[in-house]
Image (cartoon, rainbow, N blue to C red; front, top):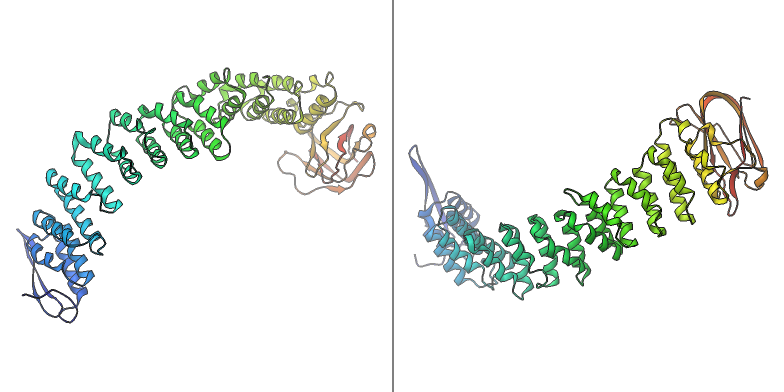
Length: 523
C-alpha cells in the first residue's frame, strides 16, 4: 500500500466479518481501505484484541505506526491481549522504535507485560522471563519495573530470593522500595531471615517499608531484628518497628515494647503502648505481670497501662502490690487500673491502700478506684460496709477522702450521725459536684436540711435537688436554690422516693462543700 496509516482525511476503513459455527472458533478478518473515522477503527482493533485473533497480529502491528494516538494505543493494547510469539516480537520492535518519553511507550510496556503474563499462563516461563528482564531495565518507569520484578519472582522458583535481594541490597533507594514491595511474595523462614538481616543495612526510608513488609509476612523469625529496630536512631524507624511488633510480636516483645513506650514521648510512646496492648499469643499477660517485678518505674507504668487496656482481671493481685510501690507514678497508675479491673473482693484492700496514699493526685486516683469498685456492688447498702470501719481511725485528708467516697457510694450508712465529722469535696466547690443518699426503701420526703456549722463557710452556693426510686430515672429537679448560711433547708411538696441527690450548682475559689449532718424529713 505504500502509505503511512492515519485516520485524518486519508483514514483507515476496517470491514469486520464474524464467522460462527458450532465446531469452529470465531475469527475476525479485516481489510484496509481509505475512509472510516478513527474511533470506529479503534473499536474494531479492540474487538480483535479481545477475541485473541492471532491472524490479525501483522495488520494490527502496522497500526501502531499511526499518527493518531488513539489508534496506535489501541493497536498496542490489542497485541498485548492477543499475546504469543508474533505479538511479543512486534511489541518489542515498537519499544525499540519509541522513545522513553513517547506517549505510546507506557501502553506498549503494559501490553508487553501482558504478553509475558500470558506466556506464564501457557507454561512458557523462559519466554516470560526474557520479557520481564527487558522491562526491569533501569530506563523504565518505577511501576513497570515493579511489575516486571514481580513477574521475575513468579517464574524464578528457587532463584526468586536472590532476584529480590539484588535490588534490596543496592544503594538505590528507589530500587530498594521496588524490592520491598515483593518481600511478601517469597515464602519461607529462610527468606524472612534474609530480608530481616537487611534492616540495619538499607536506607532509613527502606527500613520503614521493610518493617511493614515483614509484619505483613507474619513470620516470627524476623522478631530479633524487628525488636532491635526499636533502638534505631530515627523516630520513623522506631515507630515502624513498634507498629510491626503489634502484629508480629509474642511474649518476647513485652519488655522491649514497654521500655520503648517508657523512653519515648507523644505519638511514638502511644504507638509502642498500643502495640503492647495488641500483642497476641500465649502467656502475654503473665509475662507483663512478671516484668512488673524487675522493671524501672517508668516501664512499670506502661506495663500497668497495658494490663488495664488488655482487661487483665487476673492481674489484680499484682496491681494491689504495685499500689504499695515506692514510686508515686506507679502507685497512681495502679489505682487507675484497679478501678476498672478489681471487683468487690478487692475492696477491703483498696480502702486500706486509700488510707496510705500520699499526695493529691494519688489520693484522687485511689478515691476513684474505691468508688468505682464499690459501685459494682448491686446492693447500695453493702457498698459502704468495707469503708465505714476505716472512718473512726482516719484523720485529716484521709477522713475527708473516706467521706467523699461514702458520699459517692450512697446508702444510709454513708452518714455516721456525728456532727463532729463531715463529708466534703476535698477541694473548692465546683458546679456538678453531687452527694447522693440511698434510704434503702421508698419513704416520704418533704424537706432536706444540710448543716455545716463547724465548717461555717462550706454551705452550697447553689443547689438542685433530685429524687428517684431506681437510681436511674431522676427526672427534673424537685427544688433549686442558693445557700446563704451554714444551715440550708430545702422544702418542697412531699413525694415518695428512695434515692435523694443534691447537685452543686455554685462555685467558690477556696471554700469546700461540706456536710456535717444531712436530715431527711417527711414534711
